[in-house]
Picture 1 (spheres, rainbow, N blue to C red):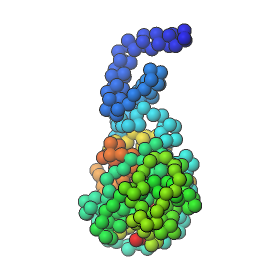
Picture 2: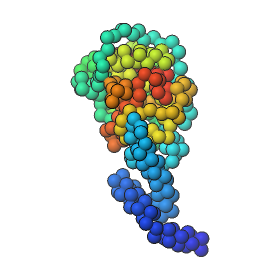
Picture 3: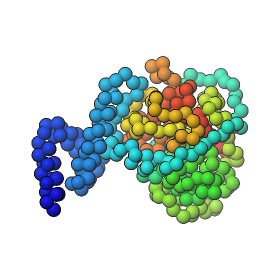
Picture 4: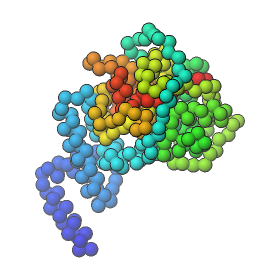
Length: 325
């Protein structure tokens, strides 16, 4: 009891400092914005983490970088906590050494955005605290491929993949790969809709009902590892493409601009997050990929981000794939 009173007295005294008052003001505003609540003890722990993150963001934004960082729903978390909650717990070795994609050899448009070509991309979804990004990359890609081929855009079930695709070397909330998920859908003969098999953000038992299958895969197309021009060709001439890359600590705070990193690796064994390339272009002379993420529409550019194109940034060309329907 005496210890807690002492701690409270120290914290109260510390809170008198103008700098801490300012930090608390920023933190409380952020809490209101993101609907957060903590116990007294956790409040000060989270305040410290938030303040460190905010200073890192401010320092980055003062420098000369191609992307901007900003506060978001993850700003009260350390990267270790973030990684545990939202990325694969074990990196998946995604090597598709020799792919089966036959490139058209162009010509390719200077830029493309499948969202602007028609009703081909579902709204940004939110995976919550489950490392199931691979399922969102999979459904996002399949939703788009079906829409481009049939004109019908329907949200598909991530939860079925979380619960049912383990035999294809996928691990539910602990990671998996879109290429392996497409294989599962092909051999399983179907994937249900989001409506019929809703997302829960936790590992569950498989409740697949073949009579309610709404999406099918005829073949899985893997683009040869590190063939980034093959990815450009596929996105330009076919459809959005699933990809995986390595998220490092600065990406968690991404806000806008063309993301680039000197920390991340470029190899197949380090990727820890799967997303969906829905286009590409250039910004201020920097070529980029336009990528749909699964952290909700409040993160990044309405749930999307731009990442440098042409340099296998963070291993993004290590294992890209899409289904044929």
